Image (cartoon, rainbow, N blue to C red; front, side, top):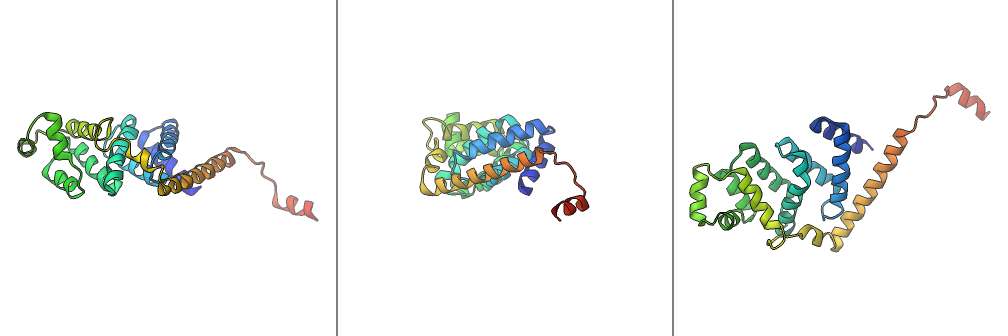
Length: 202
């Protein structure tokens, strides 16, 4: 219950709207059911992306792209999300972020080369000149994980494995507990004086 309230407060603060926060939390819950990742982890990464200027309407598509890559490479989604968010904040890809992606075996350089029709050497030169913009990186993650891409729909496939099903079962229990907690909070119980309550038991 405390986690639920904290999530609602955090997303309301970031989105400037309780209604938008409720919608976002619902969307993230539904999204988590199609992934091998747990709901709390999905929420944490969504918050991180929002803080790094990823638009609210792009959170789910972005999590799908980053999650599909992470699922295939068995790497930490949070690290990939952090590097991606840094590129968004800067507006361009720098050598530091490229190095971090390469350390995690994310084939971003090859995907940029394919998408832009240039050699990897030319892409590296463009990075040095600050010419690889965030939209180019965003598109590279999309093409890597969309239909025909090397990482397409890998989270959905992994969610059907034993480990993924256990994670989704845990998410279902979490969702049920949170629904019950919201229902309890919505009830307005009458305040009964303690002495009256005790006397009724005698």
